[in-house]
Amino acid sequence: MTTDGRALPRPETHVRDEEWMRAAIDVARRTPPGDVPVGAIIVGPDGTVVAEAANRREADADPTAHAEVLAIRAAAHAHGDGWRLEECTLVVTLEPCVMCAGTAIMARVGRIVFGAWSPKTGACGSIADVVRDPAHPFAPHVRGGVLADECAELLPEFFRPKR
Image 1: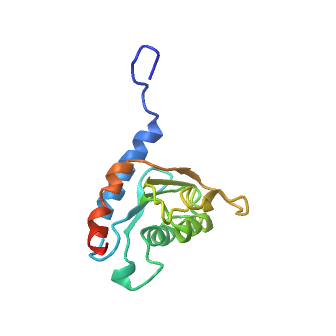
Image 2: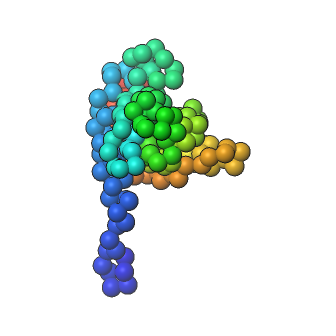
């Protein structure tokens, strides 16, 4: 807010991040039954979606089939620089876990944007901060909490019957 009460314009990156997060939310809504509804997209340097994926751990009987890992794999095949995704942005509806954060680092994803915080498994600041650990040779820029409420709304319906 300005001193006269007017709202400051939001930075262009924040508006773009929200648009991308809405796309990730749409992907999350297509998660197969039985899997935690998480959606991820990889956005290329020109702003186009290079890859997208939803969680498929239960559907594929694969403990590594998290949305982020699947999207990173697909982007590595589609992107012109092989597995190096330095100019790409990972947009995901839930804070990445240790495995997914580590995969993003190893793929050299340039930026991570996530929605809901994950206080039990989050590795971008909640329970761990894998992406900012100085032991890693590469550290992506991270922005969390983008459309956090909308992203969090995807989860209770999945977890309610399990508790």
